[in-house]
Image (cartoon, rainbow, N blue to C red; front, side):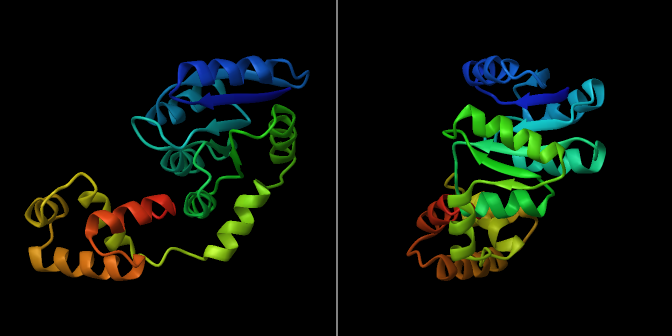
Length: 201
């Protein structure tokens, strides 16, 4: 029996996933959580083979949860299951050791097949998304440029960002200018939006 943990913040979606997977003879949902920061504790307690991780969750996102899971419970393999089929998200999920990346509009039979494939040692990636990720290439943003853009998304001033990230205001301006150039945007708000849409943040 394949043991599955579901991490999804929407109760209705989580319940639907459980109900659909419980119809499979060889799959058992052993735990559910609604926050990313509860994934590792639940995995330690219930010892699932697979953790299905939503990307957008409170506590921490699914990609950070996959990173923590790989370090703390390496025998539980992470599969990111998301509405946000963005190439940058796929690339980041693979970099932290996720074994799969699927979009939520895939048929449940495909999800069950993917779970079995991951347990068998394969990596499973949505085909269209994989092609888009290859076409797009890696993020052009440095880690620090991404940090500064992330901090700018809520309308923070340069001084606010500098305080938050322990940088000088001049350094923040340089990072913002560079990020704006790399995203082809005109403003930092537009640069943050472009970077978010591509999954670079």
